[in-house]
Length: 238
Ligand SMILES: [Zn+2]
Image 1 (tube, helix red, strand yellow):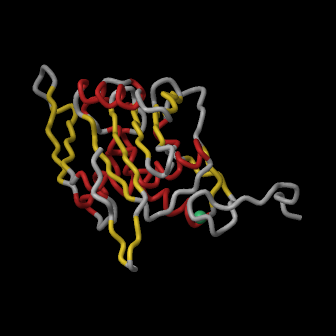
Image 2 (cartoon, protein in one colour; image 1 turned 90 degrees about the horizontal axis):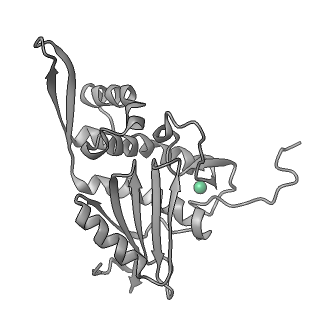
């Protein structure tokens, strides 16, 4: 007998085609390394979508944890060895993730006796690499927050907010929108989201995603219009 016997059969939060058979962690579990009381953001998905999304989980962890602004956060210490290993692999192996296409620099660090004790890593990557990663994350969050399944074809724009002024500007902008939710914090300040939705079309939305209280990404989603069989992405203003 199936364990699902008495459950309502739910469709996958990502594809909407196959039955959901597992719980997907929208924010990868590895970001919470070191947190004692964990509160996860999970959604029901099919096996195929869970596997497809998990390929991006490592990239998200690397992008967030390697960020200069989070380096003093104690929880970013956890999992650094995993990141170092994947950095080495990305150089030595033909990997299909964003690290393969990134430029990776190792700067040696010395102690007072001039001994090489550590390396500082700098990763220079094309910002477009963020789009597929955040597309999965935001589609997952949409389902988690609004129970809306967002098509894969959605137009998405990602921007990393670099300065405090920029972060304040967008935070205040979000707060002034009528349909804003959050800020909602998970596991102290490992992750926070804030989002607004357009009343006339909720797939038009804005998201502020902050990791470790410092590293903030702005994500804007827009429906993709189809006209005469051609797909065009509208050129939107923020
Ligand atoms: Zn699926």
